[in-house]
Length: 591
Image 1 (cartoon, rainbow, N blue to C red):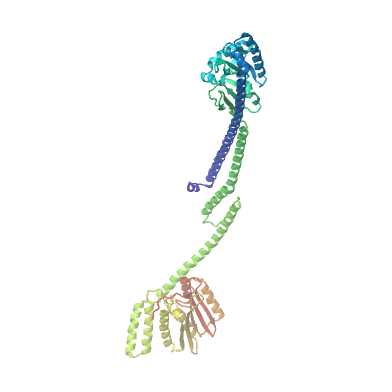
Image 2 (image 1 turned 30 degrees about the vertical axis):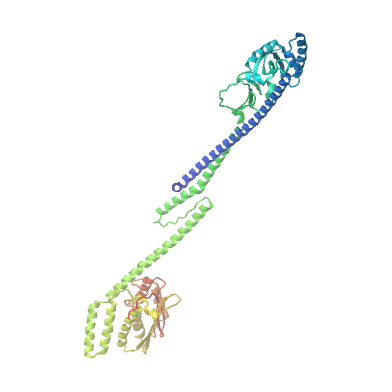
């Protein structure tokens, strides 16, 4: 994936980066929104659970308190005596006492609407005949098990006529057993009913200011006992799921009641609207910032790069022209630095191109010089095989006739011609000096030994490889243009050594001939520094014939480079010294 992206343009990569960043930001904001929603939901659930636990504890405590009151009244002495009394006169007196006792119990705890006593023998205490009849009808609903152990039975919410109008009451009853051991001990003698105002059990109406949700207390029949807002007491609660409401349920232990909370999602997530709006605004701002950054980067990177590519194309189109163009870019500091470095590279390229053209021109001219030297050398050979065979015949005849000078000269000349037709381009300095010795022996006979020759060659120099026939033109010039014109005895000194510092081979050919004036020396040195004279002749003159000093100098530079070549020192009537400098490369020496 990364390699595929790297092959795209910078603009496409920037677009991909912006898109990925926007998607990541959007996902992050959505995740934050849902995390906040989840936290709100969990906090609300914990709060609702805690609130419902508190309500449940309140209801259980109230129920337990009411149950204790019912048992205290049901098994009080006044109630027990009233329920088992058969004498009418005594029953009236006991009725007064029991009624006063029951009426006094109404004030012990708020929320008690009435007490109803229904005796099995017809002894009743109540304020309304309608309620008394309704209570008698309810006795059959009490399970047998609860009647046996005198456990309080919850009838739930019931609509009853009381004090001339109907209303809903929470009804609870307990079966009363006979505690008198003298008459039917343990026999059921009646029931005590407690009528409660529905709100007295839970006080849910006081919660309307504490929470925005709706809390319901439901009886065993699914009817609403109480709630925390405008009540529809006695109605059945709709059990169908509501998508816009969060429902929590809790069953109260040891009772038949169920506590249910309804919290509208709109109320629960009411504060999320601000969070959602903040997320949208934040996303819009970040999107604007990303777009601005994208445009800035596009302007400061992509546009300069496009200009750079366009400049390259124009540069290629104009590479044959002479117009000098330079790159100017605007953008980040790195872009300006790149343009500066590129312009510097163009300057260096132009400079190197000029030098390359000059060097190429020099190489072509050196090659031409070499070819001309080779042609001149070949022209000077005049069928060397024929001459070599002829010289061998002359040498044989001279030896038979006893002419030693002719024999020696022809032998030396034949060695020179044999050496000249060898195919090697380079030879050891020892081989080159052997031919020089043969050439000098001919000239000594010719000049009647008017000069002497000395050699000073080191062992290292003797093994170095040199260009073939590199010394013969130098020695020839020393004899013919230096020693030949000298009236007294002259000398020729040939020296060769390898310098320790750089390993170069230095050959010195020195004579004590006529020498040259400073003007002549300057002219020759000037010719040596040029590759061509005005007339096209490669450094040759009447003073340096055939393969002259100029050709020797050019051959050395062509073979070994511009650092090497030929140097001349001369003084009129003192002599001339020619110095040849070449790399000291050793090879196999020949005797």
